[in-house]
Length: 153
Image 1 (spheres, rainbow, N blue to C red):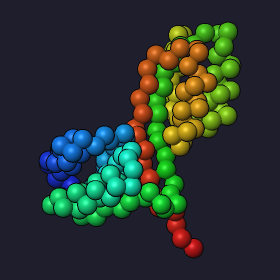
Image 2: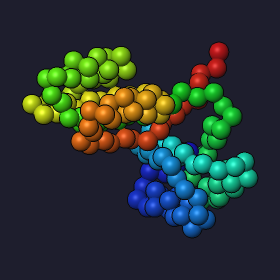
Image 3: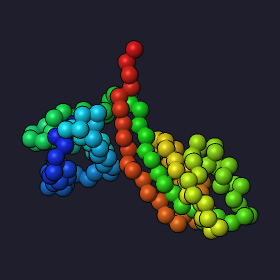
Image 4: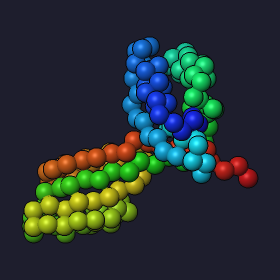
């Protein structure tokens, strides 16, 4: 959705969800090419009726400029993850190989850990996390999903 970029917009929108008992599974917010407008990508789980209700309620808020429902649209979506993994010489090469296979970047290395930046779909990131979990994850940060409609020819 596109919203006016000013103080309190996010709070009012989050309040709408919590007051109605809807759970936000992912939320990402940033300015658009127009600094007076922010784009919020909100992922909400629910059936058709719940999602329809969410869209209707959002459209009633003063700060909301436009709500776009990507539920039945072809989209391109990504998520960013920073992950710090325990490392030893014994399996350093294995982790580096996994990072390369998944198209990640190694952004910091110490004697005991490696920090990786990975961008991809939620499924890709979940798959990577599952593969490195046995090595010992020290810290994990995810941005949440962002999405854009696929360009039409």
